[in-house]
Structure formats: C-alpha cells, structure tokens
Image (cartoon, rainbow, N blue to C red; front, top):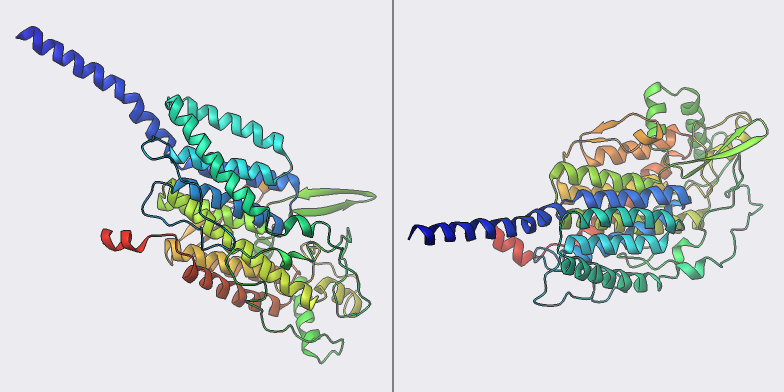
Length: 449
C-alpha cells in the first residue's frame, strides 16, 4: 500500500512539473508591456522616417486596429470595429478547437502592419526578431506560437488590404499646393520655406466620421491689415505674448512642440532635428494611462485603437479646414505688418494656420481617454524626456489637452481663434466617436454588473 501511495505521489509531482512551464508562458505572454514596447518601436521608426503628423496618425490607426482585432478574437468583453469603421469588413476568425495566444497574435498583427506602412523595414525586422525570441524563450509551445503568428498575419493582411482602399496612394501623385498672391493666404515660412504638407489630406477616406467637413469649425477672423481690425488685434496678441514669455510658458511651448522636422540654421549650415509627432505624444499618454490603470493586453489595444481613430479623423477634419481657409501664419503677418525682426519661439510648421492641429487632436484624444479611464485621471507625462525635456504632471486628460492647445499661442504658431475653435472642433469630434464606436459588448457589461 505504501508503494502505491508513493507511486501516486511521484506521478502528481511529475505532472505538476510538466504543467508548470505552460502556466509560466501564459503569464509571460499576457504581459501588456510587449504591446506597449511595440507601439513605442513604431513611434521611434515614425520619428526616424520623418512622417508628417497626418501620415503618422494613419500608421497608428491601422496598426492599432489590427492589434485590437487580433487581441479580442476570443474575448467576449469586446466588439469588433468591423461595420463600425468605414470600409472595414468582418475580420478573419481563429479556428475553433485550437489553442492560441491572442496576445502573440496581436503583436504579430501590429508589427506586420507597422512594418508595411513605414520606410525603415530593417529597424522593424530587427525589433521583431528580438521580441519574438523573447516570446519563444517563455517556453510557449511551438504549435501555439506558429498558430498565433499565422492568425496575427491573417488579421494584418486583412487590415493592410483595407488600408489600400483609403485613397492614400492616389494622393501621393496629386499636385502640390500652389502659392497664391492673395496676402491673406498662407505662404512658406523660414528657415526652410518648405512646401505645404498634405494639401489633399481631406481626400483620405475617413475612418469613423461621415466626411472631412462633418465638424467644420466656425469661419476664421477676416484678414485685415487695419490696425483697428480684429485680425490685427489677434496677430498683435501673439506678438506681445512672444515678447513677454514667462519661463513656464516657454516650458509649456517646448513640451508640446512635437514638430517632427525642425530645421536648424548655424551660419551657413542647416541640419534637421527629429521629434515625436503630436499624435505620437498622445499615443504615449495612452501608454501612461494603461500602465496606471493596469490595463491588460486587450484593454490596452482598445485604448490605442480608439485614440488613434480620434487622431486620424481629427487630422482629416483639421486639414480639411486648413486648406479651405488657408490662413496666413502669425510669423508671416507679424514680419510684414508689425515687426520684421520678430521670430516665434517655435519653428512654424509648413501648412496653413487655421485651425490648430494640436488643439483638434488633443481635444479629441482627451475626450476619448476620459471615456475610457474617467475624469480627474491624474498622470505624469514623460513623453519628452528622451528629447531633453522634463516631465509634466496633469490632473486630467482635459488639463493636458488645454495646455497643449494654448502652447501653440506661446510658441507663436497660432492666433487665439485657431486654438479655441480647434478645441471645440476636436471635442465635438471626440464626443461623436465615443457615441458612435462601441468596443464593449453591452450584454457582457450588463451581465457583469
């Protein structure tokens, strides 16, 4: 009898040892830091490749939607974006009765879509090989890994096919923006006097809004050089702010600059400084929020995707107005009509002034994140530390958005109406997205409550 008991005990011990690695690998691959690191990797490549803010938002959206769709394939808490986003049809489903790691599938989908949409494929390949080796080192069964990668690839291919129908490729061959003689309209600004960026961005297929002009803001202040006019007063306000900036205002302007391509001039030498885009900044704030809320992989993928959609539709809406009104930048106006030697704190980006892109996408992102994580969600934003700037603390997403918006006045980039009306535009767009896009299944939520 003792021998039988001892044999049974040995079997139990051996069985326990055999299943322990399985439990370990599942715990490891469910770590959302794999997802967060991968989003950051794409951000780093976007910075390296110098994608404009609108184009960066497009990359973020397709890769994040892919990551989300793969992550939620077997999670009944969530609903697919299929049928909710313009042109997105039903996403491939995993095979019944087979074991997957949908966390690994999500990484695969994100990284394949990201690699497809950037230039530096070599950087993506190097990162991909490294992170997949980490996954393998978790002792994930080989068949589960292969099956998960294959499913992630299916989802990625579906999203890539969807992206190919958004008119982006066609806009690459559209004509450049033509400079007009009208003194009221935008002109290239120093020091690089670059061509206008993405003058046809309103031709890109919208993601969730109905049309580029759905959230058309109120008209900008009529142009005038009359010193008693409202336009002159608005320009003079920026001039006076620029001459009397406090240290805190300078810090705020620099923190939210987010100009992907700043041209530096030292004597006869010109060189570029690369920075994160404003959309990339909000994607990093999303990471900060997910980490604080201890969001799992699916919840984090949901947050990235919803913020990215707010960003991309926000840029489509904003750029639609920019190239409709074509408002002259403060730097150009002030140099011509107030002070020819005035230089803004920040370098003026190469596109028309109205409305403020920072204001629109910050307003839309803040509404989205507030819906996901709640109001009065305090956080420390370390996005700009790698670019040599200290952290800033905020007591809510709205607080951060409002600071991002007003920073453009401190930087000498925008007049007040572009900032204030841009926030109205962005918040309205964000609220529309919150009401239209449903990522949580109400029946599951109701059952849980």
